Length: 230
Image: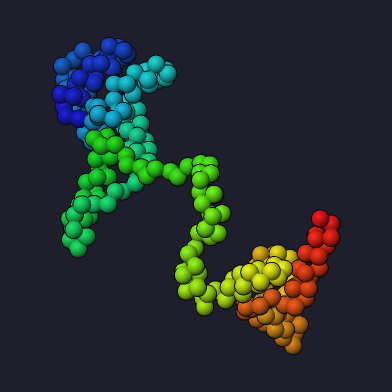
């Protein structure tokens, strides 16, 4: 704020707290100079929520101590810090190859947000919502969200999944639905090759394309039990 705004702020404070009034002309001039020196970077008001008069009134209403310039400057620093914490830098419009222009635009945007001349830019948060029932019906109709052509193209890179899908297509039990007693792979995870070293500890854990035979037998046994109970 400039000297005129500083004088206006002191006049407002003097109406609320007469202890700050200086009757001598020289003392009043020195008081304005002192407050202006300390609050030169603090605006009197901004378009987005900052008003030094409101801050001064709050202090006088809640505190028994005479107001000081720090009681105005401290809330201003908190105001700037809060706005920058809620701000996400938008992509500058400047050419990314022009580093100086790119940086200058970022700095200018942050300064505008911090000083209250622009609102913080925030990305919208993804919120949870119920799935569209039509989507479930569509997935049941097509069978999978991955087209058959894409599934066939991915098969060489997902050999364990491809082997599982092929077994299910042939009506075989899903071996990955149970835990493997050999490699200790949990349900849903592919089996792994266990190489035991001389010290008795496992030395390898490469993924197997095919489940271990004991896992297949366990899955077949559970499937038979479920069929018998049904």
